[in-house]
Every structure is written in structure tokens, then in C-alpha cells.
Length: 221
Image (tube, rainbow, N blue to C red; front, side, top):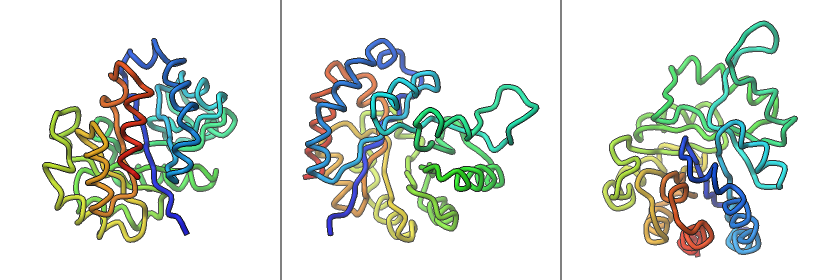
């Protein structure tokens, strides 16, 4: 039985993929058969207002954050109920640029589970991975904050972090991020036991989305 792996693309607040969203959408769609052959699910995580565009073009889509508040009186929160009606399948939570207290994470995950929405929970180290595995979520992504957006990948700089996090994830698929740029970074992460990657600037700021994503997918071969 083939094991599913994952390529999650966090577009953060970069302007390039907003201006070139048709190009990015077309790249993902063009590589769909190749990714399926490799048993890799590509998930795009755009800005909130962009999520509908990708979801309605049949791209697997998450949003960058949701809140646990219930429908009704309130202003300025991101309700989980808005996701399924817009064909969005899940969310990132607790990214290092949007950290949450553990009790907030617990309440938010509980809300998301009731709606059968998927969760990728970000952790800063292997100890947090161990803490989060009790929440029975879909993925845990470990990203050392100091390496995010840098030129050195977590695969090269902290291989022990990956292997320790895999051990601590307790069978929840473990993804890795921070500094991932090419197929060699992906290949090393997979060899260390990761089930995929969480990547941002490496794709969002790419001059050629198709070639960059294809190169990353080759790391899963």
C-alpha cells in the first residue's frame, strides 16, 4: 500500500502569487497527474480572499488561520463554518508568524473536527510535536523559526530535529518546513522519515511556478 505524502504551499502575505494566481493555479493543475503518480497531495494555502479562487478551480485549499468563535454576534474573526461552503478543506494553525496559546489551539481544533475540516498544526521544535500529537490532527509541521525564509534548509541544518519530530509525532504525518528550496531538501526530509513539506517563499517568490513545483515533486521519487 502506497503512503500518501504532502506538499503544502503557504503563500503567506506575498504579493507575487496574488498578482500571478492564474499562473500558479495552472502550474498545480498541470502537475496533478504527476503528483498523483508519486502519491503526493498538493495543498495551497493562500490569503483568505484568494482561497475561494483556488478551491473553486478544484485545487486542494486550506486557509492560513481560523478562530474558534461560534457563529453569531462578533466581528473580525474567521469562522470555521465559512470553509466548507467555499470548498476549502482545512487550515494551518499556530504558524510561527501567528502563534496561539495551547488552550486556543485545543478549542479551535475541537471546532474544526466537528465540521470534518483538516488541520495542519505548526510546531517550533520536537517537544511541541510531542505535545501536539495528543490532539489527533491531520498533520504536524515542524519549522524552526530561525530558518524560516532563509537560505539554509531544515533538512541540512537540523536533520536530528526531523528524525526526533518523526518519533514524537506518534504516527501523525510529520511535515517539515523552513528554508526548503529544491528536490534535494525534500529528498533528505523524506529519507529522515517526514511525510512531506510545508513551503512558502520557495514557491511564492519563484519566477517559474511550474518548474519549481515540479522540481520539489521530484524529491518524492
